Structures are given as C-alpha cells and as structure tokens.
Length: 202
Image 1: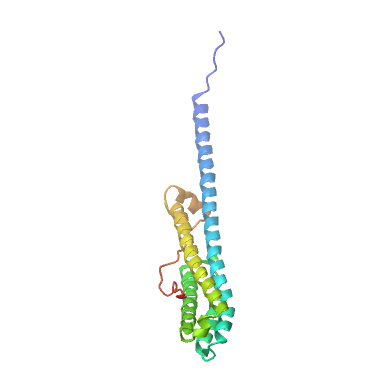
Image 2: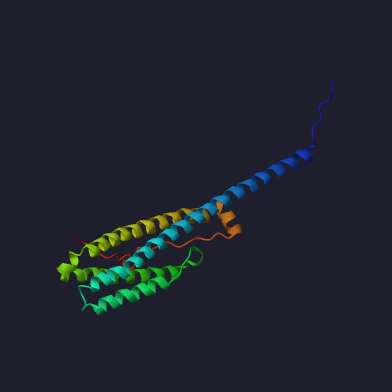
C-alpha cells in the first residue's frame, strides 16, 4: 500500500493563516465596494436635490415678469425675489464639501427664496385679473409641483445619508470606512425657514 503523505503541522497552520487573511481581504473589498455604492447613492440624491432647487429658480424670471404685468407697484416684492434667487444660485455645494456650515448656509438661502416666493404668490390675491391669467396659473402649477419634488428629493437625500452613515459608523464596516477615509455626511435638518415653501392656491 502506498503511504498517504500528511502535510506537516506547520504547513497546515500556515495555509490556515493564509486562508483567513484571504477571506479577510475579500470581506474588506466587499465592504469597501458597498461603501462606495452608498457614497454614490448620496451623491446622486444630492444632485437630485440641486436639480429641483434649480428648476424652481428657473421658474422665477417668468413668474416675476408675469406678475409685473399686472402688479407694477410691487417693486419691493420683485426686488426681494430677484435678490433671493441670485443669492441661492450663487452657493455651490457638493457632497464633498457639504459641511454642517455649508449645508446651513445653503438651506438658509433656499429658505429666503421660498419666503420671497411666498410673498410674490400672495400678491396675486390683490389682482383678480392676474389670478385669472392662464400663464400665471400654469406657472403656479409648475411651482407647486416643483416644491413637492423638492421636499421628496430632500427626504430621499436624508434616507441615503442615513443608510451611508450607519455603515460608516457601525462595527465591523466602520473599520474599513476608517481605513479608506469614508466619513459621515450631513443631513438636511427640519429647519422651518429652509422649508418655507410658497403656498400655492387656485
């Protein structure tokens, strides 16, 4: 009978050690890829937030011009809207530099714009012909839809950040997050001024 060769104990220990290392590396790669995916989800969600805010900003020139045609004596309101729009569109924020301070500044600017838009919409109450204007009614409808999309995109962004932060902060995935430089991200806070959407009534 042929003798069955048996691996030396030291070789078995070495192979076991290498297998553990290999599995550990594989786990690390899987966790890192998961973190990258979560990070991309946050970036996509933030881009959607900015898209909706930009859509609102794009509606403003037509809205202001339409109101001006009927409410020529509301110059202060027009000025507030135009200035708030300029301020809101000048702030550039991306997920990489979205510090609590930057996010607060961004929210405040968008909140000011929402407040100014609310005043502009309220002006229509004093001008029945303006309220009946087809173009104005269409712009109101678009603005209302945009405000709803803004709120939904903010909600989805916060959900994406929540999911990402859980992985970054909880064991054992936080080990890989620390090694690879993944850091927690900031959410939109429930700030009344920043969420002051103009009330649109028909």
